[in-house]
Image 1 (cartoon, rainbow, N blue to C red):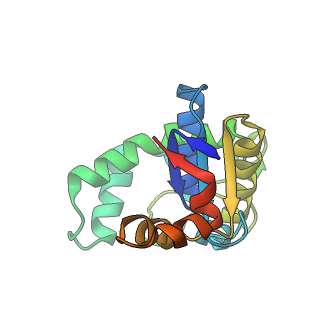
Image 2 (cartoon, rainbow, N blue to C red):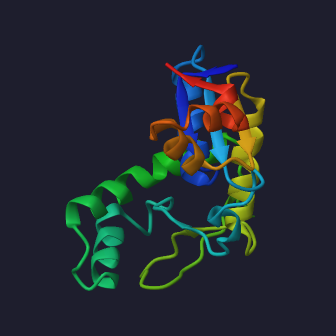
Amino acid sequence: MIKADVLVIGSGISGLSYAIKVSEQLPDAKIIIVTKSDEDESNTKYAQGGLAVVTDSKNDNFNKHIEDTMRAGDGENKRDVVEMVVTEAPKRFREIVEWGANFDMKNGEFALGREGGHTENRIVHHKDITGFEIERALLQTAKSSPNIEILDHHYVIDIITQHHVPGKETERRRHPLLRRLYFG
């Protein structure tokens, strides 16, 4: 039986980065990532463009990025959320670089591109497979953590339905994931 302190559902950028952060903050916690397909199969892998982040403070700033985002969203986006995402982006970007993600460089600086409604070059990218590169780096980091385990080809719906339906105890015992996991 495997005991888990933290269950993460999905092995995309959100699930992997969350598991890595928990692992770094709670090195004694047992973290299990459950994914319904191969560990590297997620929408993250297919993202071709880049990440919008202010890295060039000589030509760009948070206010410009916020205004570009508000304009691109035709005012439908919530300003406080946009401000939080834009101002946190450099920190989150540094994290994924520290976790091993590679981004295109030019003359020792990030090769910044411009996409969509951006008025400045602020898109960091890795060729045209940025998501694939981020997924690769995060998986490598997660696998190197002794307290993270990835269970691929497991379905969360089986945990939820068989665990909570009266009279399903025999099925619960037969299901391989429910037989192996204990969340206490």
